[in-house]
Image (tube, rainbow over all chains, first blue to last red):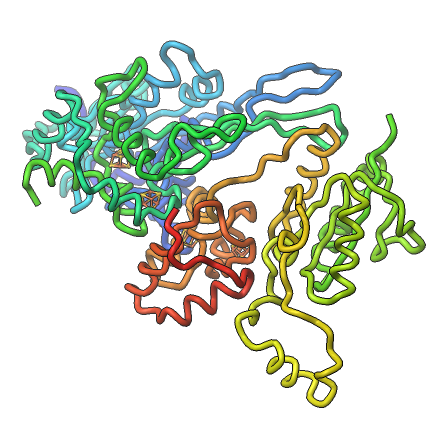
Length: 329
Length: 251
Ligand code: SF4
Ligand code: SF4
Ligand code: SF4
Ligand code: SF4
């Protein structure tokens, strides 16, 4: 039998071993008490019980704001080059792994984004099992079953059961096998989620809840603060801006995270706006998250991480739409 | 190519905005190389008061007959008028008591000579003239000023954020003082661009950059009142940098 079990005692050594393959990052509490993916300075800093970070791991592949192109008369147009520094990203829950899998489809498939490609290749994904809280509903999106990892670590009281999901993961496990022993993994406990069927059925029939009164309620309360999509592991909308420099000759093109609830999201030249009201923007947000469009039509992009419901200052929750329709509260 | 001409001036204000410009130390030679600065009383003596200019960058609120005259004069001799800073754009700190009686306030400060004081309620430029561009902030951000100057040189529009301070705050992974600590943070109502400077230092956003487009004022008020803040306190905080809000506005 393969060596697959890592005891709690060997865990710090395992982390040290991981750090030999790249800079080790994972969930830590910042000085002001925010759960965030950051570089790990000491194994004791890792928050193994982290439920969710504020900003999802997408920031490693697709930062909030960056220059993607520069122009100068001497060098002409130049695409930004990502550093592609090797990172070992530890502590990814199944929902975050699923979120990365979704972004992979967006940024790696038909028209690969060079910056995303470079950074994505440089990051090794180490998954970690978790306990859902009242905001999670990942069972719903079929993400409770981990996918898209290099290594997944199933945590139990005595230690972790490891499985490799890629050749890179296998290599690391092989390299660190002195720290492991062979044990029969416990049978997985199915993750139950009451709203699962409801969401999947609604998505399949292309439900838009067009008659619901909730849209008006959401639009009236929403502060357009942006948190729901900044914190969403699968929101990838960005705005592109051209910034000419003072010298009148050089310029850069920036891209920055956007949110479909902002006034400017549907605004085009001449001030025309495809979604003038916040209510229209909410309907659009729902349709993108649950019905998808373009090449991603029919793919539910919500992975049930619960971040948007947790961070919204006015507690807006799209789940209410499903609950209202199904009369479940 | 002839360099565009520029005037920089101030009305009733603290001169902090003009200082922002002088603080662009690294870029000043470049700015001076791109623009012909023909009027800048705070920085250069003996400028031409009457020549027409391509750009007038003006700080401060309109609060005296002299202010109004200067503003009208600058408007009529400039191609682009830039309201520089929160006072010029919204009224700013000097306007926080605009809802109280001017006569009473003047008496408290000037006692016997109050009758001779000719000032009126500090008001933003757009109450009197057409404003072409605005840079918010108390004081404004250096980067936004440079972005505006670069755009003017090119004849394009500067791109400024159309979202609230919260967006920058979340992106920086700050602790949300409103949600986590129930503090009176105005971030959701305020124009971004400062990089959420205050919450990043653990201090609530006081709103020094003024209202963001489509601010949901009514919802923020409801939220703060649910958290136990009296309506009067919220309003007095909101008035610190911008005297006139529509408290019922949702969109
Ligand atoms: S929509 Fe909300 S629950 Fe779904 S993945 Fe995004 S943040 Fe998580
Ligand atoms: S987090 Fe809530 S208040 Fe903020 S934009 Fe999203 S729905 Fe609106
Ligand atoms: S601390 Fe203030 S500015 Fe930052 S997210 Fe919270 S409400 Fe917005
Ligand atoms: S956080 Fe608020 S008060 Fe502080 S600089 Fe920004 S806009 Fe001004």
